[in-house]
Length: 218
Image (cartoon, rainbow, N blue to C red; front, side):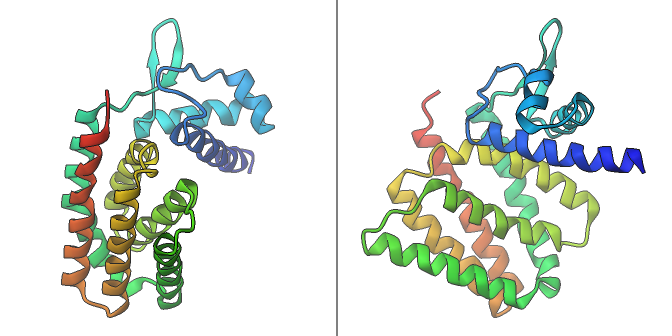
């Protein structure tokens, strides 16, 4: 029972630390101090240590001799590779997931993205945090219901790494409107449902991520 509980705490810790990395609270190259993280998250060092191992497996952190675990940088080349693999695998996952996805959840996501579009067109602000969270929920839906453990593990890891790169650039207004429309196309294809349309809509959306290559400065 104790190991199960520690495992759960490690998952919680990994999620919290992962969010800190994605949102820039922990910067590229920054060491992950177990004592400080344990204090901030209100946990012992054991689940923190296990969480760091999880994040290292995902590629979010890596170990350096003499420094311990540090936050991994994501260069332009990394993002290109990650996105290319997602273009190949995520439409497949979505098509496999479509028969199993809850219809009420799809309807809820459609409402959310329609509200985003309405807000943008009427001059209201849409926070980058809200966009990234809803983007994560939609893509996670396809991953969770794809019915393949291997596919789920691969895409989950890629999603975590890509979110770091994407979050920085959500405030690019031109892309925000475009991506909202793309997400609506994806949700509507899932709602019909039409697997071919869903795959093509998702592929179009992922390929458009190349806009980040134009605005990424390093």
